[in-house]
Image (cartoon, rainbow over all chains, first blue to last red; front, side):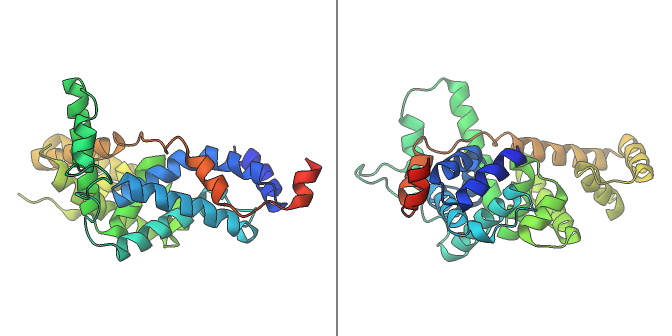
Length: 187
Length: 82
């Protein structure tokens, strides 16, 4: 996979945009998921995930081919997500009205969109609950937990993505996991 | 009945696949004999499983197309050579 990616990046560096589209297709779900878990709503996740790919394209000449591309890309996406968290008002979008649908929030739209079987509704409610608990974590714990559990990234990769000593990454994962244990144990 | 912080540290090292063999033996033995720590470990594993259960979302369908539209124009020479 890394070899294919690096060949595509050589083409991108020469200015070939189709090669970049392939890169986006390969990583879009992981990057979108990372942003979604960090930010907690699809609107912002899409915005920041797109921004991450655009920045990667614009700065592709600064990417060092000897390093893993995904580490570099995750780093851009994580930094943009953390910047957004620090700028935004808490829960800004959670109860925001959806444009053109007076009184309808994202939640009610999801819940009443189509009639879902009961177990599917329960699964969605559970997912929303877990997401809310992840969002309660301070961003320094949230980022390590999200990186660790969306892609099973190694401690070394996480330390490279966040530019932190591995000992710090371990401590943050431990504390983040302890916080989640307390928050989720009664589910 | 509060057990040593060391045991909790071992639990996390275990979950990160970052534990020394002899520490793992100590941990396993302790979990068999201590209900409180066994519950603690169970709750940690549950939290991890719950977080992992959320890991299946996909980018919107038009995601790649929107990015490609937002990029600056391609260099003419590359387009011509393809």
